[in-house]
Image (cartoon, rainbow, N blue to C red; front, side, top):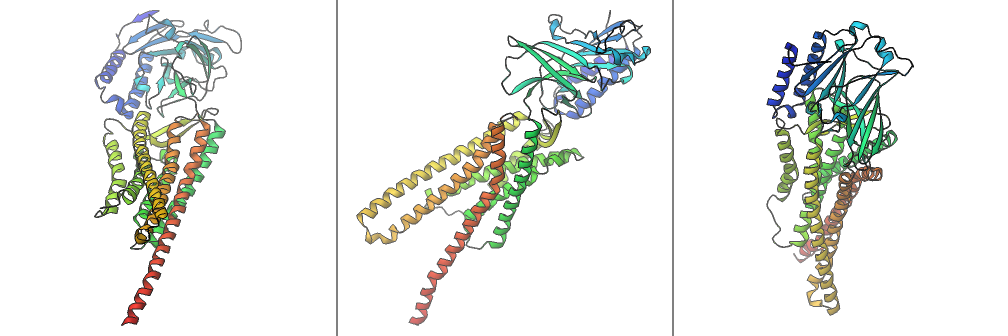
Length: 537
């Protein structure tokens, strides 16, 4: 074996390419297009180095470059002189870490596939990478060295009868939970994502370390990734049907709520109904946007998917915000009884309900030069190795840190309001009972107001309690069921999420009915007064 330094022009160009990458660390991780172009340019340079390497049959060379090492092997006929239909020949990958030889995987290539390649083109290149930042597009947890297999002229081995065999030894498994697993993956250069299609994984674990055997039927960059346990096909299909049918029904009922509000509203309509309808509008926007997530991932240009993902995030935050406004309105109505008149009250609530989420999403979109938070995300079905692309938040840490914090603050706020309302209801009950026992006839005007206010407090408390339980429980389950592993939580989330629009629609109808009944009673009570006045004249 000959160890060559950077003596050729192509090797110097490769070194320069990695120097550019290392000098632009503030740009390289943030722009997927730059990474994709880098990978393709690197692949082209590797093929040029292979083309310039003049090796005799059976010869080999090692090119030690910055951040990677390339082993070239010209496979001779004598090397392939093996027997057996499933026979393979072992090819040594280049060693980047001499102190840890077990880090380099053992690789066997199928003899029958190599025999179909002419001798002059039977040059195999194995690349070992010191780092893997260029292969990370969606915060993948790459647990092994990335190794790629290249053939002269860009020739690919695919649909192999005798698959390629790789063994990654001594991988750490101490931090793996019950819902994660080590899986063999290949890197799809065109779609810039890791996939498991055509690869099977076998592992043997001993003392928190495991040996992973990868059996793959094609040649590409390979690695072992620590992945969440994906959802099976049957559950995927059932949950998809529940989600789409449920969101469609929820969108229908929320739209119906808006129509009833627009055509049935009056000047005396209670603010509570307007707030209920605003929450219903946020749900309508969320459900309709959800129905577009898969479509947006297939549309060009890319900004369409970014727009759909950002709009869905905005509508989700609007739902949380209007849920908090429901509790705030109840507090002002039932707890802070005096001095509750606010000029342009509904306008101010609307600015908060629709404006705060807009500011959050606007800032998230504004930092796209630093980090792109919205775009295409990929989900995998375990027993089919198929991926499903949707438009959503691409950064898991951003999703959970922002949304979970926002949801928690609103849930705690609503819980505090509910405690205050419950305490107020208990106090009013005690006052009402004490007055009833004393028989305070002289305060009849006040005693009849106490049960009315008590009834309004109970109804308002039940409203916020119902909305908090309905939406709070639903989205709490969404955060609890992170990943696609807890099937009962996922099914419960999909079912509850499907009923939100329907229950809010029923509540709006009941509120509107009570409003009309109240207006009718006011008109009837005012009629005798007018008749008496006419008679006295």
